[in-house]
Length: 293
Ligand code: SAH
Image 1 (cartoon, protein in one colour):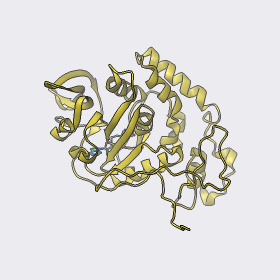
Image 2 (cartoon, helix red, strand yellow):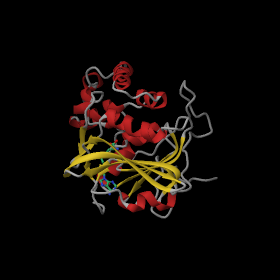
Image 3 (cartoon, helix red, strand yellow):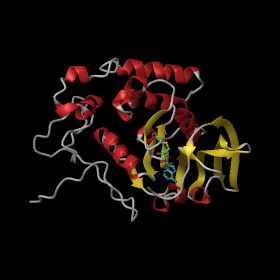
Image 4 (tube, protein in one colour):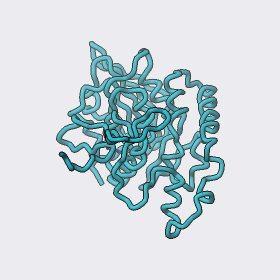
């Protein structure tokens, strides 16, 4: 008879090792299942209010939790979010995103769950949005483009992927559908916690959230089939390329010749012969910083 508390989800990983993450499934005795057949989990919620949905989140931030639910439903983002998301996907396709796997993932993950309730109505516009602590959730087009670059040349799922800059967790959720394992690292505690909260209701057993300095990569999970950075520095840290598998691909923003204010995307491929670097289009990402805060 074990009375051990169930682990919260996503299972917290410490620097000691990323292995052993467990999927939390519902209790065996009469655990209800959703119509989709997804096992219903009982995530341990630390806060008094379950902030899984924008509705609950808005209610939670409202006065004394007495808001009638209806008035808390963000306009235009109720049951019809599927349609708004599909319109975003159509636009992505028109902008040149062709990989059906990427489009499917972008059409499935609900971006509005990752932004503050006040910004929910802009969640499916092709724009970056503030997520707190001076950081932003990347534009859908940029997320799709970078992941498409990682997948290029392969018809299979990616193996292990390292994401530097978890932010609100949106891109990690997209990656979870396209990779076997996702290790995502964030240097700001506040955002690491926010991502954990945002991702908890999605129950993605292959996403491992890490708190630390992503400049160092995450050697415990290496080698990676793909590395993706959501923050840009003067150069790509050698720790990242060292942790890239042969045949692996890395996509990151880096400062271009114009200096700190100008960035371009760089694609780095590790071949049997070494590293091959390709500079791509201009982008605008938050700065890659060292240390944790
Ligand atoms: N992929 C994120 C985008 C977040 S913005 C999303 O979907 O929301 C980029 C993030 O990179 C910021 O949260 C910032 O704090 C983080 N970051 C910057 N330098 C970092 C570093 N050295 N290690 C880990 N995270 C870093």
